[in-house]
Amino acid sequence: MGIYTAIEFMEERHCRPLTVSDVASAAGMSRSWFSRVFREQTGMTPKDKLTAARMEHARALLADPSACIKAVASSVGVPCVSTFERSFRKAYGVSPTGYRRANALAGREAVTAQTAY
Image (cartoon, rainbow, N blue to C red):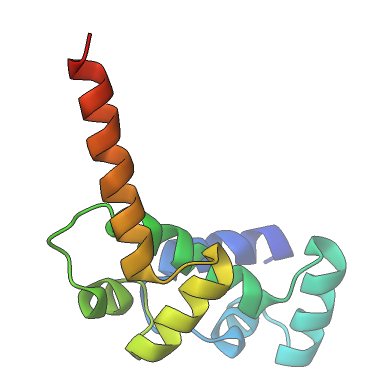
């Protein structure tokens, strides 16, 4: 399994508890060798790539105003809410709640603009 196959593996399974060691094992490499080769080929660490996939999925889930933050965190493979909130803020510069509020406000403004015509 090459690095890009490992990326697909991570993206397909990011909702489950998954570690870099799990991905390295699936790629048939030691964790340290996998991490080194992954970074050389992608410019980011495997952990950063896995977190990015999780946060992108979380962003989509947060569009649903009825989904609670804890459920979103768990749905993307991050069982600890504080870790999820910290990762989301690092990725997008805003908390999950702040993102949801901004997204809801933008949606209301778009609807208002459409009905004004």
